[in-house]
Length: 260
Image (cartoon, rainbow, N blue to C red; front, side):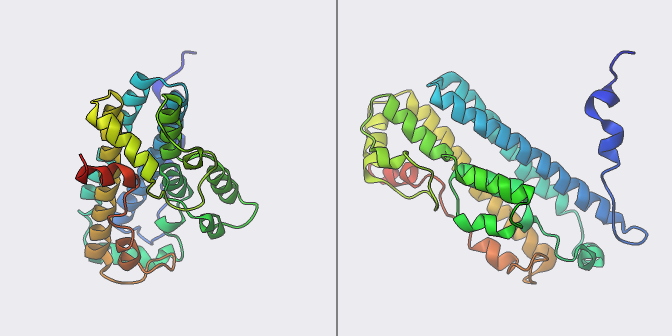
């Protein structure tokens, strides 16, 4: 028997994964579940693309790296646009089933934490949010043991012959990416020489700006939906999310703007 569309994509299994907990169930709970499941699929794809981007940079394959970054940016635009769909949900309708979520929260998304770690926004404490020995804990520890995308890019610059100190990429970072004067100087030289590598730099700036836009839209969505209530996972809700705004992933790419 020939493989069918439904078999290939596991459609029956996929459509069986939306299980509202409200009695009725509440009409908007299905939308809430679908949106967040789709986000998890996009996180999976972003991790897939991000790992591939690291490989391409490691091989000094600039065209493939550029194409992969463009794909990640296009996916990010879709992730931001999904917030428009979520905001069609009236706050009263969300509150009708919110208490049934108990401690379940996007704050617990392992893949989102992995994505942040990949991008360089990392903390060793991320692993503490998951039970020791759990699959999530194992995945976070593994990600923390890898170089960030920025470190891979900086290593690529060093391989291309630019004056980059080994300390900028020789070990996985345990904190968010910090500015490095030597890296900034090398980037400034690349821009002034109009190197083709600056095309990758600008795509990284686009990615950084896109993540900041996504964070902002997420904050405003939470504010308009639950105001300033505590998050279901025990976080400070919108107040916690607001603290993540406007933190650049790649500070050196922003710092050189005033020196060009």
